[in-house]
Length: 90
Image (cartoon, rainbow, N blue to C red; front, side, top):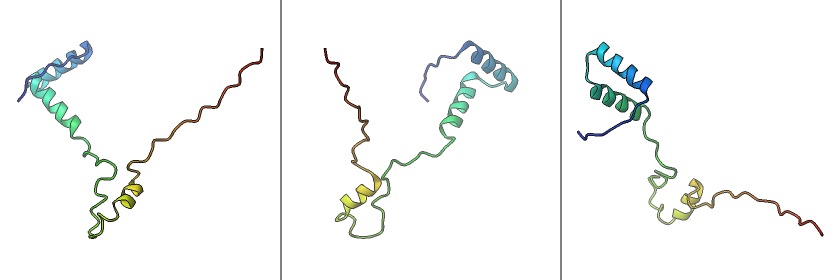
């Protein structure tokens, strides 16, 4: 295991200490358990386009541009059009 330091709000520290006493377990064990529960609550999501080439077809290399276009890969991000302002005549 790797040692680390965390900063807790005073109220959270009080709650954690109460839980330590209630369960008769070390603080580090409770923190590890809580962190594990937090980071494993949802499966990791694959990035957009992941699996796009797993079609089972042998021509995917020849169709790479077409396949990537369908996933939106490489598309320019949407832009915001800012209207021009008119200068006041003096």
